[in-house]
Every structure is written in structure tokens, then in C-alpha cells.
Amino acid sequence: MTPAAFGDAPGHTLLKMPFTLRDLSRLRLHIECLTAPSGLTELTRGTFLIAVDAVATSAIEHGNSGTLLLRQSHESLECRIDASGLACEAPNGAPRENECEKSRWGCNAGLVTRIADRLSIPASATGTTVTLSVRLPSGKRPESGTNERQAVAE
Amino acid sequence: MTSGRGHPGMLPVQQLSSGDHAFVSYGCDHAARDIVTTFAWMGLAQQEKVVIFAPPQLKEEEVWARIDVPGPLVADARRRGQLAVSSMRTLIHPQDRFTAARQWQRIEEETDQALDEGYRGLRTYIDMHWVPDLSADVDVMMHRETHADHLFADRPYTEICAYDTRWFAPDVLEAMHHAHPTSLLSHTGALHTESSPHGLRLVGEADVATREQFNAALRKTLAGKAQAGQVSVDMSRLVFLSAACAEDLVQLTCDASSPEHVRVLCRPQQAHLLRRVGAEHLSHLVLSEVSC
Image (tube, rainbow over all chains, first blue to last red; front, side):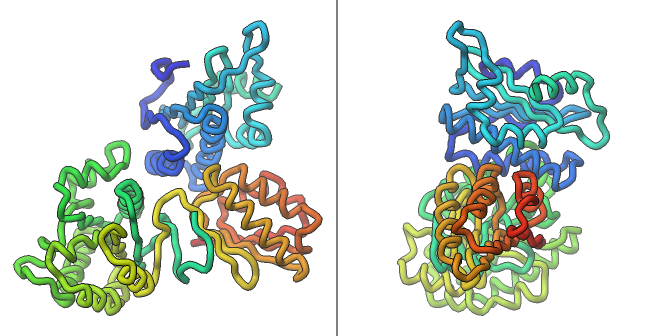
């Protein structure tokens, strides 16, 4: 997936930033800055940051880089990480989501799933985009979130 | 990445609070930028006024460009005067010769003004390139640094003195390092590990970049204290603990060579994470929550 595809995400963009290992600390600072006024508790923001770091770390470990997009709508805070180096496909070229999840996220997969309100890991032959989102206190949870969570749990 | 005994008041810049007078050294502009950015953002978030006394050789717009905070936060703070860029020459004006007394007077005035304007205090980042710019004597500067306690005792004031290792002599840097009550990690993203009589103290950030160092320090400490039966791991100065490092800590304490009791001093966020990755199931791993 290319960064341009991020344009379909709901809400307004808070941050769009390509990153490598040397940017990770700065990336976390930026997310802290930008999510501070979100209304989320310190614990929830901290947990969201840990989840984002875990996904960004996987992108670095497997592809050396990634691109992060942080967006906020009236109901949720959403972080998408495009890990273009994380190509994962079956021999016939079809995406293998379960194997992708297992190999890339390892122990962190379960943790990240528990942390985020919604987590989707759509894999394609050319790359992987991971989306984490958390509900904002005054917002309503999007109905589509239920299906995405179930898809990961399966 | 650093290790060893370190400075007794070693802190990550994120944990500076009102009343701290901190030393930091930098050897590249990238490190200096990260420190000043983090310092400024922390101050703005805490409703403090922030003044950056930048290297005199930089143009003001270059300084603004270096404050790498995304979004409208900096522009808004600049517009309303909460965040300002200045110079030591401007601060002590109309005097043109530096004296500690004049600088202290002006800082006290600026702090009082910040309070009058409704801010919770003043924090300044002082790049020490002002010393050659004003042809100040290094001894005068040393006197200033070692006799400035009153600035921090009476008012909500925080200060970083930033020394460029490419300009200041090693003996001056060493002296100034010890002249300050607090010393900062030289760049963000770093991890400082320090042995203590009871175990291990960790300062900074534990993530993929420092994970190897984090694990090595833990292994050494747990093995070294196994005979003692009890060990303490102080993570209260750790500003970030990644999920992977948290899992590593839990795994390492499960090893047979680990002491019978492992006490982890940590902040609530870290305790929450450690419990999620299995700490709550280990009776010999005790989490003691502290607030910083």
C-alpha cells in the first residue's frame, strides 16, 4: 500500500511521518504531543503509544522503515502504519493473514489486540498496513469495528 | 547508550520538573534539536512559559525551524508569547558585559512576569555558546552555575544549560557536569543503566534500539544478585518501556538463576503493561508503583 492510499481514512490528519530506527523516539514524542489534547486518560494514551511502538518496531525489524499516519475523528483516534517492507504472500500470491500475524507480531500480536479498540491487519502481496484505533471518551464506537476485531481474533 | 555509575541526578529530559537545574552536553546538532524540542513541548504541555536562549550563531528562524513539534502547538504558543527565542545578550541588555548578578536579576524578573501572565512558571534552555559570544570568562560562568540555587528555590523555574562538546574543553565539561544538581541523558532514545547496591537502576527509554542493552543489564544484575535472594530493579526513571522489553523482563525473572524475589519500582503505566504481559502470575515478581 502506498502512502497515498491513506487519504481514504476518516477524520483529519494529525501526523504523517516516514520513519526508521533512528526516528522512533521522536515519533513517540510527536504522538504524545498530538494525542495530549484528545481527552483520553494518561493510561489509555500510554497504552496506545505502546501499541503503536510495537507495530512500528515490527515494521523496522522486518523492513527497516515504515510510514505512520495519525488521524483523529470525532469518535476515535486512529494510527495506520504502512510497513511496505512486510510483504507476505502465499505461494500462489494470495495474502496469508494468519501467518503474517504470527510471524510478524509474535508475542506482541495478542498484546496489541488487547490494547486497541480495533485492530486490522490487511496483508497484500506488496505490503502491509496495520491500523490501530482507540475510542475517544465522547465518541461512539463505529459499528464496523466489531467485525474487524472478530476477524483478527479468528 | 550509556552505563556505569553516572551522575547522581541523571534524568531523561522528559522527567525534568520545576526546580530542576540540569546540565546536558551535545556533540551534534541532531541531539541538541531533540533535547530542546522535548524540553519545549514538556513546558508548553505543563502551561509554563518557555524561553530558548539559542546559540548566537543561529538566526532566529533557524531556531524556530529546529523546534520539531508537529501540529499547531508551536505556532500558537509563539503567537501568544508562551514560547520565545532570545539570547543572553538580549537578556542582560543594556549591560554588555556578563555578570552572574545581572543574569540572576533578569531571570527572576522573567519568572515573575511569566507568573503574572498566568503561566505556572518559567523554563529556559540556555545554549552555552553565549560564553564566547560575550567574551565571558569560564570561571565567571562556573561561579554562576555553582551559586544559582536561589533561582530554583524561591520561584517555579527550570533550566537546562547545554554545552557543545565541540567547543568546550573536556575539563570544563567535566566540572560543569558535576556543578549541576541534575544531568540529562545526552539525547532522547538513550538508555542509561546503573548498578546499585540493591540491584539495577534504568534511566531513559527501553525500546528496540536499546533492547539488547536492557536485557544485558538485567541478566547481569539478576545473575549477580541470585545469591542475595532479592534484587531491586528501579524503572521509575524510564520514560518508555516497550511491550517487547516488558516481556523480556518477565521472561528473565522466570529463569532458574533469578533471585527468589525481584522487586520492580515502576510507574503506573509500566506496571499496567507488565501485568498484561504476565507479571501478575509471578509471585516472586513484585511491582511497586511510584509516581515521578
